[in-house]
Image 1 (cartoon, rainbow, N blue to C red):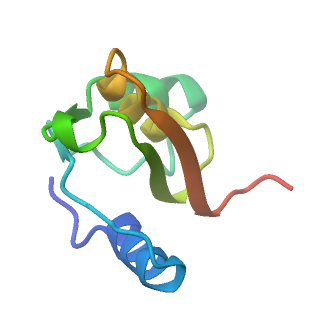
Image 2 (tube, rainbow, N blue to C red):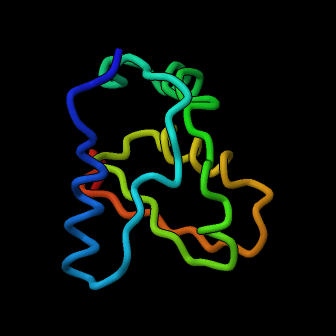
Length: 104
């Protein structure tokens, strides 16, 4: 089931404008749409996000420092899925930006 909008992309676009850095919200594509993660436990979240993203613009991240942006990180399963999609690409530095986290 496809959800209404991609709030992480909207956050990334806003961060790009404020920080004056380029954004690209179509380097990855979702391979499928999964159900909401909110009521799932840790193990279920990691299982449901395996292979969730595919890198489609490899050439745009080689030798770059990229910032992965998400709206919320609880277990890190979604970000880990993106890491796996990037795995093996040469000389890519990855940082993660998140709007909120349930942890202090």
